[in-house]
Image 1 (cartoon, rainbow over the protein chains, first blue to last red):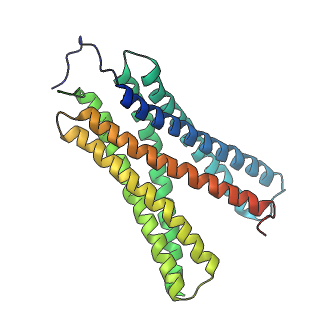
Image 2 (tube, rainbow over the protein chains, first blue to last red; image 1 turned 60 degrees about the vertical axis):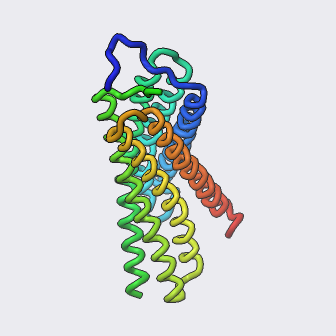
Image 3 (cartoon, helix red, strand yellow; image 1 turned 45 degrees about the horizontal axis):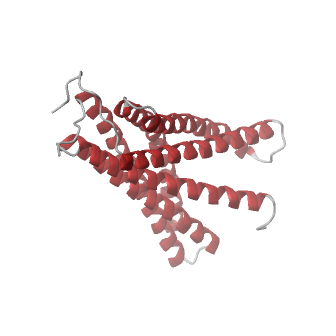
Length: 131
Length: 124
């Protein structure tokens, strides 16, 4: 049963605010870590393009950095939405839904990354099994 | 006490995220299991110890993140499929997600510290 539109929206309890603050902070910190990895990859990519790194492996840094930048943006925005649910009374569920939408986008990117990881591990396992 | 029930639009957002979280959880769990399998295979064929250790270390975060996302996804899909406990189930999912993010953060920081240590020659 959905509440009518003219009823006041749901306000999270103190305990629920604690959980929301926790997920918000973790999402922002994880976004920060992804951002740091993106900056590191970008720096390595530039160093590679300038001929300061040996081998062709540096070409991988730019796409890895781009993926991490996308993750960073979505996780930080999601974290801010979750924290907004605590600090701005009146629209708690709206902020939570906005946060979930951004997390959903980030998780979609992580699915692709995880699939690549599984493919690499499968290849390595087959290599082990065959040798 | 009757709890707040999400609207159909809100249920759609929650379900989409729940399905994606379950998918990510399943893939991460499969990846972690494969890493364990690779480590076991490595032990059986007496492969290089550092490679075996690498697979073992890679399996732990994959399995813990995978299981946390699976749990969070299950709770989120439960929000849509059940009536009367929407906010409670959402909060359960949020706690599972926080665990998954905490593991990801810790493992990435450890990985970056190890890479930095190798780069600076501390472990060389």
